Image (cartoon, rainbow, N blue to C red; front, side, top):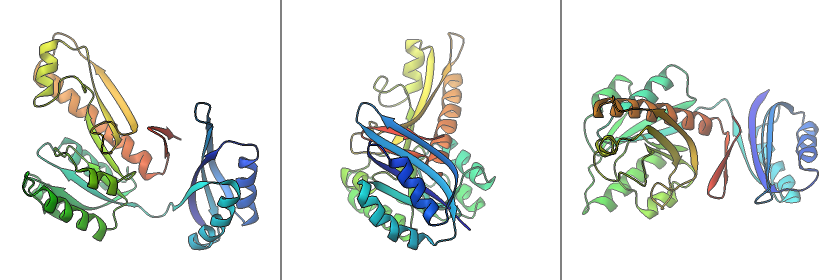
Length: 280
């Protein structure tokens, strides 16, 4: 038996769950996990079904084409036996990169890291220790277009279904954002829109903040405004130094990004306009 995940969305109407269940039953499918949500604000219905079936993925996709048209579904079928091909991008802060590599190596994330791309050389030895190809692609205002063309080339050559900006401190062009739509995740501190620019934790400490946090979201052309996947916070007080805030912030960023990557790679996230539906 083959294991699959079916994600779907459509306008909410009676009979969708019955129709999907009947479709899978008619092909010898056995549902192991199912979750659904209908958004009262948009009138959209979302569903994730994990099931086993003897049919091949291609055979199911062919029949889903016809079935999906009958209910006006947007759907995607995934094979759970395959780890998601992934590219990691990083600059000079390695806490998220190191955390993701360790979790993947430990079997905690169902991703297959095909390569690491960086605009600095700092982590080539870390990449080598995990036997992962490292691509140093410097980026400047005059070379940005060529650099992004090389990045796209690597992403496509590796068949990456996910690109993770693990503290990659370069603004992606609109063209690259569109190319990676729905398959690129970014992480940043949650001080935005306050404390923009350099040394945000110094700015936050100077203002005496009581909460620090992190946000993981999908990358869009609107900087740091893509659909939010996960957020978390940690409480701080007057006794915390800038170094304390920075350390706590990095820990929070690593954990938030790891959860977002896990949910995406397990196909638990469905895009709902500028928001997300996550079946945990």
